[in-house]
Structure formats: C-alpha cells, structure tokens
Amino acid sequence: MNEIATLLDPTVIRSGFPSLRDGRIYLDNPGGTQVHESVYAAITDYYRDSNANLGGPFETSVASDRLLAEARAQVAGFLGAGSDEIAFGANMTTLTMHASRTLFRELGPGDEVLVTGLDHDANVAPWLLAAEDRGVVVRQVGIDPEVCVIDPNVFAGLLSDRTRVAAFGWASNGAGTVNDVAALCALCREAGAISYVDAVHFAPHGPIDVAAVGCDFLVCSAYKFFGPHVGILFGRAELLERHRPYKVRPAPDEIPQSWETGTVNLEGIAGTAAAAGYLRSLGMETVAAYERGLATRLLEGLSAIDGVTVYGTTDLDRRVPTAVFNIAGRGPAEVAATLGQQGIFVWDGNYYALELMQRLGLEGSGGAVRVGAVHYNTAAEIDAFLGAVADLA
Image 1 (cartoon, helix red, strand yellow):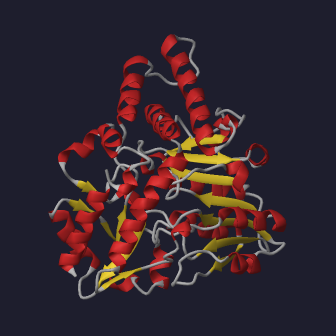
Image 2 (cartoon, rainbow, N blue to C red):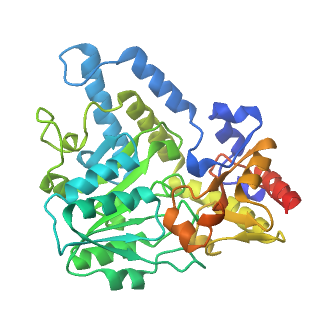
Image 3 (cartoon, rainbow, N blue to C red):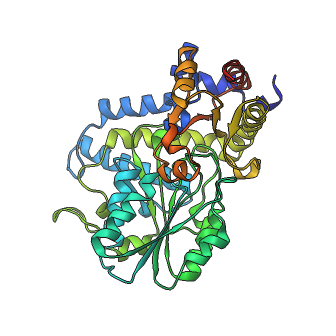
C-alpha cells in the first residue's frame, strides 16, 4: 500500500462513491465533489417516506419536521455550532446576498465593510452591492501574490472603530491557500466588527469548530463536501436574533427559520445531513492527514516539472490539496481540455476568484488551471495527472 494510504483505505472509501467506478480521474473537486452513496439513500428515503411540506398535522409532514430538526443537529455537529444557529438556503451565494442585506439594514454613510482581494466573488460582491445601497464605505485587504494568504497585520491595519462587517475566506478556492481565520476573527472581535467567514473551499478538507475559531457567521456548501446543492449558514444565535432578516409576513419569527426564505429544499437537506454524518464518521482530522500526503505529492510533482508555474505559498501548513498553475506556452483552457480528453478532469479560468486572478496578472490571459484532490483520490491518480502535465509541458 502507498505510504499516504495508511490513514484511510482508498478502496473502502471509493466503494462508497458510485460515480468513481467509471475510470475517470476527478480532480475538478473544488468546483463540486462526487456524491457519497449515503446521500443517494437519504434523498430516496425522503421522497419515498416523508415527502411533504412542513408544519402539517399528518404523518409525512411530521416526519419532514423531524428530518429538518435532525439535519440541523447533524450539520451543527459538523460545524461545532448549536442547532438553532444553522440555516439552510439555495447556495452560499444566495445566503450571503440575504445576509448582507440583513446585516446592512441599519447601516449608513460612515459605516465600513472590509473585504479581501483573495475571496471568491460570492464573499465580495454581495457586500459591495449592499454597501452601494446603504452608502457604506468599502475597504479591501490586498494580498502578496507570492503567498496568496491574508496577512493579519495588513488586515488589522484596515479595521477601524467604524468597521461593521469583515468578510474573508478560510481557504482560497483560487489558490488552495489557507488563512489564519482564528487570528482574523480575534481581530474583528477587538474592533467590534462582525466576522463573516466563507468556508466553502475548506469544509471538505479539515475540521471546523466555529466556537474555537470565534467567528460570528460562517457559510459553506454541501455539494463541495460530497452532498447535494444546498447552502449552509451558521450565525451566532444572539446575532441571528438581533438582526431582522427580510422575510414574508407569515414566515416564522424564531431563529433559525426566520433566516430561511420560502420552503427549504427538504430532500437536499436530507442529503446534506447524510454527507455531514459521513464525514463525521471518518473524522476530519483523519481526512486532513490523508490529504496532506496527496497535497505533498501534487505540489512537489508540479513544482518539479519544467515550464510549470504554481501559485501561492509552498507551506503545506497553509494549503489544502488544491493547486493552481500554468504551463509556459499553453493556455489554461487548452490544458484543461487536453487533460479532459484523457479522462482527467480539472478546471480553468478564474473560478469566480476574480480579484485574485487580477492581482496575479492572469485574468486577461484566461486565468489558470486548477486541480483539487479530496480524500477519495489516490496517489496513483495524482501520478497519472502529473505524467499528463509533464507531457504537455
């Protein structure tokens, strides 16, 4: 057995993912992972046994109420939160659009919001739009393109007593780099600002404990951690209570339901609970340890190929197993298409990390190629990918 396959058994893990049986190499995971079989079963069971809207006096509606409560508890356990601090939505972008309007509802000229030049635009544009609506001042944290992480000292220098919200990511979907979110959240607390953390790219790769990190809000997406297309919002209960979300009049006033617009995707939430339960059964520390081996192999292999440029820090303590690179003389779209023809799936472009690609000087030339492993990938798949890249280079 390969040295990095001692923490998780790849054969056992892969047997739980039906779509992996076709011989394709899925390294497009940062855009959306394959789905665990427990998710298939949970969605099927919901449609067969409990398909009804909430709040009714009959059996299937009562079962749907119970399922939603159980799903909140499962996801809360995955994030280290309370069940009353978990709201579901269509996706992270929609939830953040909603949260930005709600948190800015009573703000105005002179108030400030802090965003970064590293984030996915779903954690930038909603705040820019809300700031425009309310006359709020926008400040932006720049990044060093050599490392592609947020420098806490630079971050601290842009916080002020007028900063009301600071939005930043746990891991960069555009570079695979990891920020010191605990330090950033501590700086927000000191400044009296609300911290809003995008954990979409981090959630499949490592443990999340919102209490330990000290964030006020955190968002992630189940389809990035082996589940269906459902967005998840954690918010500290006192903040969910304090801020009045926009909602229709008959909708519940109590949290967290008050933060959920319309009928939630109950079948998707059933699948989301299954995905969270699957990962909790593995243990995210175990997942992270296994993936570190994949990351080492991936980054060292890419860096050893002449003509390949890899972006972001080489410090494995500050990375997930995602790498963004270019090959001299070949456009990112060409590289991704050629690999795709060989059954190796990767992304190219900016992946909505618009500001980052601009700061790297890549936006005008098609961005970069992105490859991302997760715990169902193997050393053999990484080696096949590296061989194909070497051939192209």
